[in-house]
Structures are given as C-alpha cells and as structure tokens.
Length: 524
Picture 1 (tube, one colour):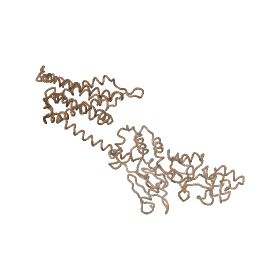
Picture 2: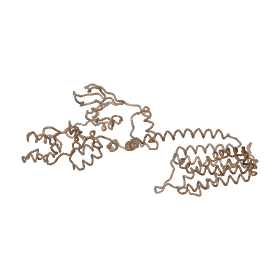
Picture 3: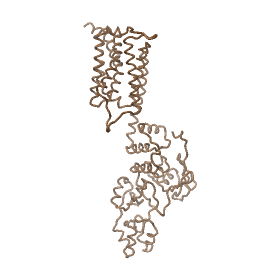
Picture 4: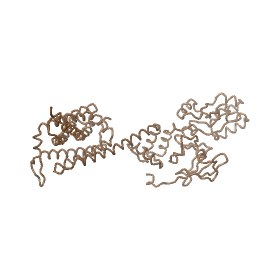
C-alpha cells in the first residue's frame, strides 16, 4: 500500500501515461493507414487486434526487464560501428518504416488504387495484421525502453502501459476516420513516419537524435494543418450559401477547359479550393460550340424571361383595324410564320394566327378579328422561371407565348426558337442581321443583344448581374451612366471597352466592343 501513498509514484505514473500515449500515436496513425486497406467491416477488428498485440508485447517486454537490459550489450562490430540487439531491432524497424511509408506515399500520390468491377480492391486481412505486428514490435520496444528509463516499479510501468493503451483504443476509430477522410493528413502522417524511420536507423548506428526535435517538427506541422483544416471548413461553410446549380455549373465549365477572367484574390482562392480535386481537361477537348451549348444549358435556370424573349420593339404584329390589302402585303413581305393579331395597338392582343391560314381566311372574306379570336394568346408574367416556361411552351404546341409586366403591358414574346437560341446561339431570320459581328480587333454589337449570350461569345465574366433588372447590352450601358449615352461616348468595364456607335435620344442601336488582352502570366 505504501507505493500508492508516495506522490512521486503518482507523478511518475501520470508522466509515463502521457509519454506512452505520445509514443503510441505514431503506432496508432500507421495502424489507421493500414486498416484503410481492409473492407469496412474488418477495420475495427484489425485495429483492436493490432492494439491488443501492442499491449501484450509491451507487458511481455516489461516482465523481462532483465533481458531488456542485455539488449544494449554489443553483439558484433562493423568498422567503427558496434551493434547490440536493441540496435538491430531499431535498424530493422527504421528500414521497415522508411520502406512502408515510401510505398504508401507513392501509391497515394500516383493514384494506384486498383479497382475491380467498380469496387475497391482490398488487401488480405492477415497480411495487414502481419504488418501491424511488425510495426507493434518496433514501437513497443521504444515505449518499453522509455518506461524502464523513467520508473523503477514494474506495477507502475504496467499500469501506465495499460491505461495508455486503453485511451488509444478508445481514440482509434475517430482518429482513423479523420485520417482517412483527409488525404493531406494521410500524407502528413506518412511524412512523420519517414522522419521516425530515419531517426530509428540513425539510432541503430549509434547517432542519437533528441526526440524533442522530432516532436517539435511534428507539432508545428500539425498546427499548420489544423489551420488549413479550419480554413477549409470555413470556406465550405461559405460555399454552402451559393446555389448548388451555380457551383456545379462552375465546376463543369472548369472541366471543359473554360477560363475565368481575373477576379479579386479572395474569389481566386475560393475557385481554386473548390475545384482542387478536379482534373482540368485541355481546352481542345471540347469544341467552342459544345462549350457554348453546355454553358447555355447550365445557366438557363438562372436567367430571366426578359433575357430570352424577343423584345416588344422587334415584334411583328398584325393590326386587325387595317385594310385587307395592307394585312395581305404585310404577311407576304415578312418571313415569320406566326403573328399576334391586335386591335389598334400591341397591348390589345386578340389572338395568334399562322400566316398561311390568315391568308386563306382573307381570300374567303373572313373577318380578321373573328378569325384571330379562335386562337387566344397564351400570356405569361415576366417573372416566370425559364424552367417553368418550357412547360408552357409545350402546351402552346408550336406557337409562342406573350410576356407581360405587372400592368398587363406586353414586353415581348417567346418562341421555342428563342429558348434554343439561349442555349445554342443566334439563328437570324432572313430579314435580320446577327446581333454580334466580329470587326477587326473587336465586335459590333446591337444594343438589344442579350447579356448572357454576349458574355459567352466574348468569353468573359461580370456582365450579368442577377441583382439588376436589365437584360440587354443597352440596359447595362445605361445603368453605368447618370445620363443617356450618346454616339461617341466610351464606357470602360475592364477588361471590355464599349464605344457607342449609333444611338438616338431614347435607345442605343450599335456599340463597338473591344477587349483588353492579357499575357498568360497575368491570367495565371
């Protein structure tokens, strides 16, 4: 009982428990890496067997302390180096750690995980257990030598080893899950094992490396990795506030080889971190048309109906109050096949008719107003989501839908072709010119050009702002000025420069756009 009343005994016990846990962390980390090679159902069993063997070995070694002392007696000499039993065990264990850590690093960094029939190829259970036994032998010797050097009472040594092993057994599963869930931590742990293996080899040759240096380096690396994990967790928490569709679209565009314009440092860091595990394919792997269409599909849901529709000013409509000859002439001179029929003004829509059917009705003397009322228009609000718009267009059966604002004023119309153009690019009619025309080192762009399409054609970012209610280039330029831009005015939105070429008092008709060129080094 006197042994339990001695304060020095308790102090030695607590100190030894801490040291045994510290010395056992290396063993535990390596067991975690080896256990990951087994099927999930066998990993807990392997950990328990590994740590139990380590406990048995340490208790067995402690029970033969007298034999442990003889391990330091030189057995033979080579040149100026003499080797004892302890030195040979340390040499063997150090070489084993160097070999195993190097092969594990090579396997993980070279991505040599083989798969069969879509499943991960697992290692043999007893092969993994055998490696754990060899590892336990190395680390058990180190731990026991530490215990013998610190405490003189065998029961205290055994109690410290048992308690330390119990703590490690409880912590083994969460530590294993954490290590295997973070590839950078695995690489860091393998690097630690390389350091420990090198120190064991050095001690086997008689060169003592103070453990404090190793633990200081390991502690500093763990602190840096802790900061990295905190930063990553904060980034993922912030990214969770971004729409999943937006993050998915950005990832797919990166995989297609798309490049973003220079962004603030924080945005660059976020983009790099988010896609750190993605493999950037060469840009040539996808044609420009393919990248354009995929981008159009991915961004369709985030667009507004106003950015897709044919605006009010470009609508060709039939005035039912005009003469029959005027209506016939308009139908024959316009390449469109569908027309809204209105009474005096566009907001008084009567119905939607096909040109050839209306021509036949005119030949038979049928009243235009009565004929158009048989096919009333389909009206949708300008706040409608583009995805829901597709269902409305299906019900229209090849016709178009009219877009109105909250006051019932017609803002434009949308045909299935408009949706296709939003995805695949412009398909001009016979009486239309392209919205964007390459002109030397720049482009001539119509003021009514959709910003989404322009952003894709110019391979840039930042033109579309979901918080703003404009959808055309003219709307963007008007929003940049306190007054209506005039012909000759220049507006700079880096890296683009916009020069107004043609404009009236109430609209912008034509704009020249030039793009500042960056060197590759600046882009990177």
